[in-house]
Length: 373
Image: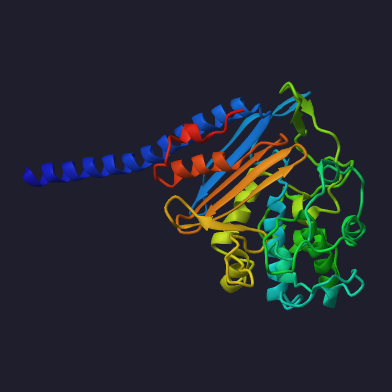
């Protein structure tokens, strides 16, 4: 009888333990869902998709709001296609590392080795420096340049800035530059003797089964593509103006779903198309000439999480798009959030999700980390 009672107690205890694990995950998701709804409402976001994986497995993926008001269409995270904006830079960084691993490109060669006709500057600079935003190439001059609706190839896009002086001696400062990634993609095309979009599709999207990811072409709508919105001065939701992103695809011109971006994020943790050494080129912070760490690898920010463990991330801000990708290699967690609204600050919302899924309290309750409108 004692043996039977002991067995029953162990059985009940084991069941309670498994239920506790399940409930912990469910509690996190419920808390994150409440946070997401509050964020959507306060920021007046028409539509948003959130997908989160742990140890390679999707644990939560949900759509909020609408990808289109006319016709009214709900967001579906494995189908709704968003502009991912500057998360495109992280994809470019991995593609660049792939080229380097395959001896197609040398990261530490002068850019003039690949583009000898590019206008000569006061200083030379390398492919790696371009990918780390330390080459001295300027960013957009103004909103008109950022939202330019002029269809151009990558090489044609160089005309926007190729005759401008460098902002500083390469390697001495960090300066975020989407235009630097235009130049980088021109170099990658020349080195690989292939169109940039074709190389990324064949070497990143197809191997990772990111079948809903592609370059955005002007005046072409892909299946299940969201409409793109902005807020008026009275905070009314309006359709965003058209924009052409072909020339800046490497820095902000890809389309994707939140679930496809999670697949990409898991490649950063457990690389399959790259060796770990090659991936380290992407995920390791670059240094300035004085040894100072910039906090940016190749197309990817490199920081510490609230657990003091590595956090790899990139935010994105484009016309009709605000996004964030967060990757935690030690915890095995990937968080992807895509929206169809211009000008949403995503970093605090990402920090709030981090506080929930990394099981550590933030300095303030997660709900308070959502920006006020």
